Image (cartoon, rainbow, N blue to C red; front, side, top):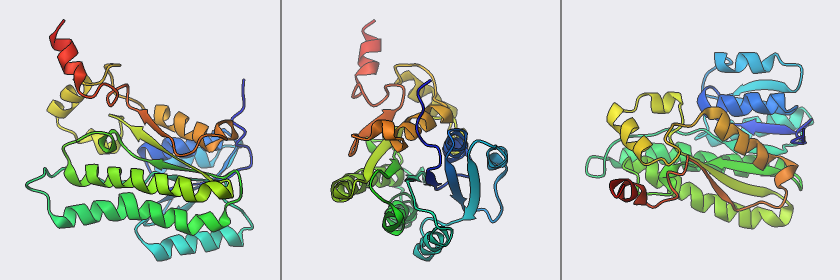
Length: 258
């Protein structure tokens, strides 16, 4: 079996308390990495407990509000005090507001932006000084950042994250630091658990693979992008969406013509 070559590498994962973040942290530990898992909770979330007890890699938990610049500074200082460098960063933390265009408030846009975009920027700014050549940053976008999705605040934030990712890839490339983005589609997570049945049905109808995705399927792509196996990949945007964003809305037309 080909190794991901993540043994001994230190990776920070934000929003790791549940869902995709917990899956990413767990799979990284299984691959032999030292994982610094962060989330809002004061104590380690139960979803991370099993990963923290494995003998393959190692997992430590730190409380972090990604929209708080001082919190990022404290995290960077703590990592430095341990004598560790940062080999990878997964900007996974994200929130949504499902208000439609004519109902959305500026407060909705600001709150989602603070977490989904500013939080990623702060992570990059805080941890890049601890990175060397060969480090990798993965920003977690969304199919909403590739399409005109209906929750306007969330969609706008993920489009903005694409721009941030591309600038970061350009500016950090000369340092040997790679920056890539994954765009999950309808993944079974606590965030999507609250979606209306109509949303689930309509989304699956637009997904060529005809099913929802799992958090492990997203985490697998994230691990590849963190690993030296993707050493010449930067500035890439990889949909993990069962083909939802690939047909430009033509699937419903294709289905209607059968």
